[in-house]
Image 1: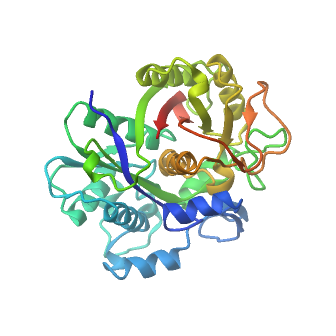
Image 2: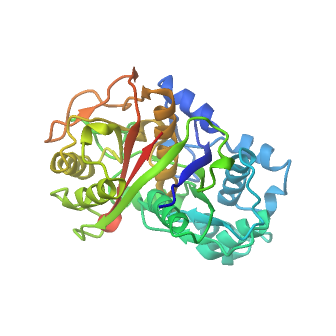
Length: 384
């Protein structure tokens, strides 16, 4: 069986433009969530996690014309560029694939007024991927995964399986979304946005906080491309759909359990104590957090330390699974558990072990989970 490794990574978010910068801010307990009164995003002030676009535009302006690319395309290109610099992969080789993850893509084009530089065809996700492919001069036609909030993890699972089946040796997986009035108004119509920074798994949680960002991981089966002595391997992954509701998650947690169980079986993990911690989806909505606690109970994982990173980044949609996987990988490498910002008083039925403060622990393996609209669920196990 072919092993799949993480060769390199990058995060662009409100907390920085590299994975290391983002991890250090998480380690130091710094949140990227701020109160914004930007009328282009919302007619009323709201808490959100926003990228510093002045920095992004300055960086991007050194390699290309900002006016010719959307905001999402710019962070995709910058994130992928940084990740590729950390490897010796030749993107022009036939054994390298680009796989993009996003929920809304260039949805901001619906809100632009006559920008003559941007073709409205780039609203189509395949066109966005085509733009990125052409920029990097990749040989293979790119793939796109758009599957609600599990898009990022599903993209990693798909990439791993493509490598294991020897379709490709390397897969560049990049997930991203930016905040727009369209996206925010949609969540506001659900009354799902918290009036204060989100509080995952807390009794006083009031809903999600949205964020924007981009995360990139380069997966490979070629160990000669690995520069980091701490090799991170993808042990297994699983997906499921509980088909409970168009937006609401399962009330029983069985759907997420099936995804976790599938990942554990693929990874051949029988002793669940091998899992050092769990990076949960943890959106801070009443139904999602409750569902996750039940799924972890069914899976026999309530004693495993669990965190949600939404208090740092907000919910970054198609980027969430990748950004949060990268932070989890850095936790593994550094033997550090990152806390759940906003968590104070236990607020879910099952007695899961929510991480409340930064702590050191010898780590080998971790589990990352995600759940999304339409009842979709995903789980991935990483090990060093």
